[in-house]
Image 1 (cartoon, rainbow, N blue to C red):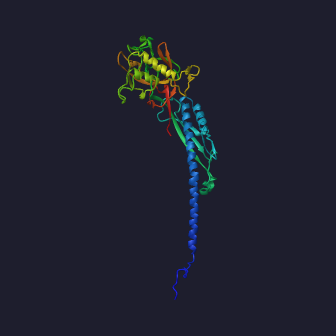
Image 2: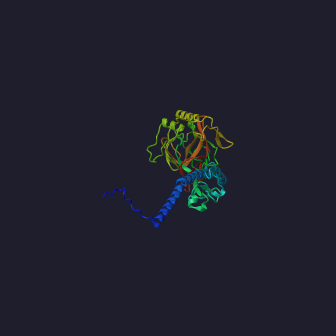
Image 3: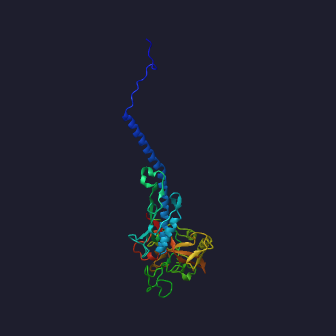
Length: 385
């Protein structure tokens, strides 16, 4: 008998059962569902995330712009700026389109501890959107596969809140400190027995004193507040944890033209720098003015005009001190009451002169109840959501 080979014996054929055919159908159906879900995630997902990011950027910009309007004391200005700045941004709808919001998308409220804005709310909330309710829903491509009622549209929103506040501490002070305003009854320019000083009442305050010109550093020895005291001060503040105050003509000149790095706030004590230092003062002020020589104070608008910068480097921060604790002869100390923003005009008849102005700066908010907060020359804005 011939040997049988593998090719001579046909494998038995097993009939396919109905249950196996059903399992295959279920597998195919499940695979299609997975593919559709993958399409939604892979294509619509990135569109949703990108649109969310675009709307958030628009909300952030609108809230910060609105907060700057609150600093100017106007809710109407804050609202309009929020609407405008939202529209300067774009986000996907069916294509990239301007982010349009209305007054109903902007609201205002007071924080639990409002600082410095008086009767105005200090927080603005802005919502940007791509929703069906607002008529600008985001177009998707595969969402209908998992939600047949969606008409391939999705709702995306973003929210931002910004707060406006008065600033009572910052960095980059000029190395001068002048006395806060007091009632000088004998008109001798010095605080004497019988003179009146009350923070928040007699103080230099914005907007009342914006544009007022003051001497930041007298040149004539007869104008010194005390023998050897011409208003220069040293940084960092005493006992602030940054080491001993830095002294000397070189650092003094550098900080006139540049920027001291230490934070200074109301309540800090500053060491005075004795001596007229007319040479370092003249050189430092000349270097500062030469950074922006065409800038000038415009009395009609109460602003700096002609600057080559968005904010002129000649707009400086100067700490004011408590006049009831004026320095005496020799090395002395002064206590900071508030931070002033001033435009440094230059040297006039030997005196360094500047004018009060308002300025938005990064810095520490005033303490709750600070009597000078409502009239601060320095204010800030920050995102809180």
